[in-house]
Length: 103
Image (cartoon, rainbow, N blue to C red; front, top):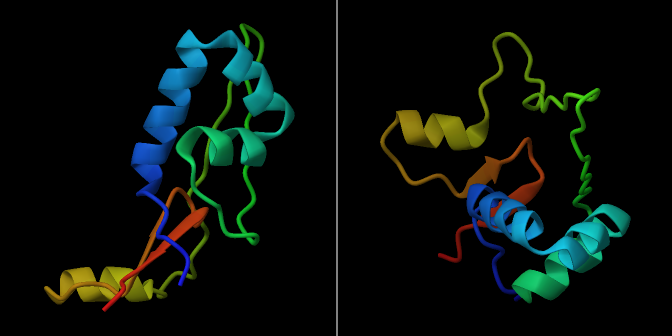
C-alpha cells in the first residue's frame, strides 16, 4: 500500500511558505508543480491528481472554486461527519488530494 499523502491544507501551507522564501523552488513549482511538490515533500502524489499553480500579479487575481455538487447531493465524507462517524474518504482542496483511512 502506498504511503498516505499529508492533509491538503497542510500541503498547501508548506508549499506556499517554501515558495515565498525560496525563489528556486518557486520557479520549479511554476514549471512542474508535481515534480517540485513530490521532491520537496518526499511523497508520491496519486497519478490522477491534477496540480495547477498560478502566480498572482498586480493585474491577475486567482480564485479557487470548491468542487461542484448537485443541489441535494451530500458527499459521503460529509455524511459521516454529520452522523458523528469517522469518514473513510476525506476530500480536501477541491478533490485534489484524497486520504483513505487505513483501517
